[in-house]
Amino acid sequence: MLIEIHGAGFHNKGAQLMLEVVLRRVAQRFPNAEFCVEWDRSISDVELRRLGLKTFFVSAPRVRPRRYPVLGPLSSVAGRLVPGSLLRSRNMVARHWVDALIDISGYAFGDKMPLPRTQAFASRSRYYARRGKPVVMLPQMFGPFESGAIQAAMRRVCDSADLIYARDTVSYGHVEGLFATGCSKLRLAPDIAIFAEPDPGTPLPDRPYACIVPNARILDKGGLQWRGRYIGDLVHTVRLLRQQGLSVLLTMHESSGEDRELANQILAQVGPEVASMYESNCPFQLKAVFAGARLAVASRFHAVVSALSSGTPAIVLGWAHKYEMLMHDFGCSEYMHDAKEGREELEAKILALTRDETHCRVRAKLLECKNRMYAANAKMWDDVFAFLENGTTGIKADPQVALLQGE
Image (tube, rainbow, N blue to C red; front, side, top):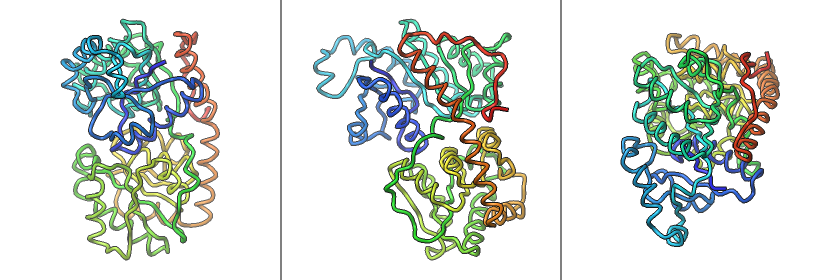
């Protein structure tokens, strides 16, 4: 079985974490499965070899979706003309060899994302659907879909996909709202990275510490309210945490350099004796660092996932409903910090989580909520595996969607 993983990448450690989770889980069920991705600059040959990934002969990377109308069909035709032995010798595959498509985009379909990205995936999923190949979209954020062009493209995606998983009820509602009678292919399941195990051999600081995770996307997608104050709020957070006796790690959760630039701005104001930068190419090491922290103040979604699922309380500065819904699912919505709130509210949340009584209560709540999500995660994988194996889920659509916490 050859499976295309769509939406994978290495510059964003959350995307890399989801990729590696999928590779491990699918390989456990199908030991002989092979995996391929579109080549792009974020994926080095070293990483491809380490993970056993193959690339397409003539790729149409998702980061350049406008190329897909040309490169997608070209990839299909060229793959039939070039000898298979030559492709295999170069660790490449032809598109018509693929048996199934699994999408792990995280967040790629909605008004805040480029229209060509949704249109390109609609073409890609239709290619496989017309050939009877399964198309599965693993848990991710969807919407909103206010633009007519986005709505039309997303309907085409839903028509071609066989299983569509939203990771929160708001995203579920956005997809369901595209159809007058709902979408029978739509399911609800928690983010797949929640149950990823941290690397047990990761070296951790000797003294209590907190992680701060900046996100450059908050400046271009979070609106004007964040742009004028985001760095200042993080600088204030660093100083406050140091006053509480915690070491501070500015933890990078992407490798393009954009977040590092923000971290350098923070370090320039507080000094290297107050905070230090932490980077790792391994997302499971990053999860171990979050698991060992006293608390996190984060703006990268999967940094928050890694913290909360490890029982580490987090204060979230975000820009989309995915953050709010994640905090709700873990029963800690009060630690979502909105751009409309002042610095006093942020300070109060930080001080609350540094107190032992509050910290222990929140940690217990996080682990309890994670345990409640386990059944939904296991059911999702069972259904996906059954579909990949048999070509049909045999699942009837449930009009009553259970919340992730089983409420």
